Image (tube, rainbow, N blue to C red):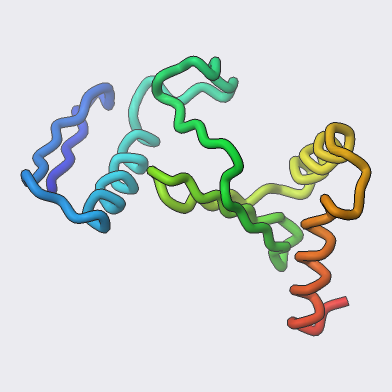
Length: 128
């Protein structure tokens, strides 16, 4: 596979073999993602409309969360086409997300995934 970005960073030339395995597709997607990050125009910071055809939309994704040593929250989200995406969320944004989720979810212990998940993790790692 060969990916070449133009000097003006607005177009890309691809050379792709006819047959690709699942792992080769995953590598191509990851490589294209890195190339797209360097292209112009950059991806806007405002979220697009949900009707946009370029959005990967998935109900009830599998995810995991972990507290990092520096206080950030690491979130893993599994997209059935893109694979795993990892986001390291700074404390201030994690607090904003927490507040939004608390304000917009039922107040019930059956929905207490994060507390149970972190408590179980802390017990196995000897934290807390």
